[in-house]
Every structure is written in structure tokens, then in C-alpha cells.
Length: 188
Image (cartoon, rainbow, N blue to C red; front, side, top):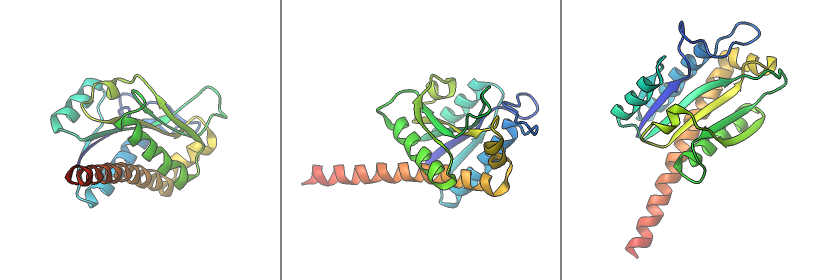
């Protein structure tokens, strides 16, 4: 299984959202990307880590890698400081991208107890121009003081990463089960 993990934004050029304490989204996502990649490599997945300032470089790298799945990791932000929680985006409902988003969303919410903001559709460049099931995960709101504490905590970062990796493997396992059941029906 080949998976592209994209850390959203780019340290030094595009910080992304910035929390009350100065915590930068780009730094959080780089750390989380590396941790997710480590978990997936431990179970023999091939992983491409990509964090670039130009969106086409991200999608081109993933497509050239031949990724089977693409996950972009972000931290959300809002003008309303009370907004908090986790949400995942896919381009459209009803397909493999939505299934992957649901698996990742469930793992994060159950592991970290974040507010479940659900799976939504989003017309994001990296989702539209990637040649495989693709998901953008907004892990937590860096603009919310409680969520920002989670994003700044080493243990929580590791829990987020482990949850994303488990969500990916849940999706792959469901896919494998579906194909095995389809084959047994065809052979009967």
C-alpha cells in the first residue's frame, strides 16, 4: 500500500493558522505527518511525506509516487474562539474518499475525545487533483485554547498521528474484506 501524507502549509513560508500562544499550523502538521508516516512504515506501507508551498508540487509528487491513498493534515481556525473539534473533507460523498474520511474521523474522535464536526465535502485543490482517494483532515482548532493545548502536547500529537494511521488501516482492511467477499461470491 502506497500512501501520501501531506503536512499542510509550509514552515518558514506559509505558517497556516497561528494559535494564541504562537503555535503554527505548519509546524504541527510537519510533526504529525512524520509521526503518521512512521506508524505506517512500521506495518510495511510505502509512504511519501510531502510538505510544499506550491499545491501543484504536492499533487504532482503524490501522483508520480503512484499513491493508493492521499491524506492532507491541517489544523482548523475560526474567528469564533469557541469553535473546536475535528472534521474531515472529501471532494464528494458516496465514494472511497468519503469512506477513508469516515474511518479517520472516527479514530480521531474516539481516541482524543475531540468534538465530532463530521465528514464534509470540500473543493480543495489537493483533493481534486490527486489521482487516488483523498482526504483533508482538520485535526483540531488551533484558534481554540483547549484544542491548541492538544496540538501543542507531545502525547496528544502522537495520539492524533496514531489515530490517523489507524483510520487509514481501518479503511484498507474494510477494502480488503470487501474484495475477499466479492471474490467468494464470484467463485460460488
